[in-house]
Image (cartoon, rainbow, N blue to C red; front, side, top):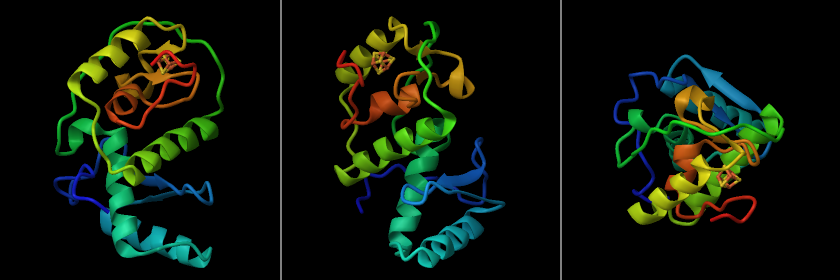
Length: 167
Ligand code: SF4
């Protein structure tokens, strides 16, 4: 796993969205009261399901999922706040979580590189005009109601794609 994965700067400080991850293989949400316990509990869950529980994978994926949810909390370049738009569409909460987790894992496996500033600006401008865009969701981070991904994180990933082909 690469050092380009965004990192939690201080794992003794809880993230705004709390210590939890969504397991991409079992669809199980694991929450804990600390970073250390989350690592232990998730590794035990994956081990119990005969899945990869290699410590570096667990650690990198915790960092990636939490940093995708709470970009300002992590190190690395994380821009924007958005302002407007209109909701439509109806993915379930679970499918939204899974879609976003899959986007994050695809991005990590693709080398965890960020989109260019121009790409991010373009994506942002297109989403903000789109009827699927919900600006106030995800604690003001916004989300695409078509795929359920959180806006700012989705714009940042170089591997992201608009589900209806607008970018
Ligand atoms: S990702 Fe595509 S469908 Fe979703 S809000 Fe942006 S432009 Fe619309």
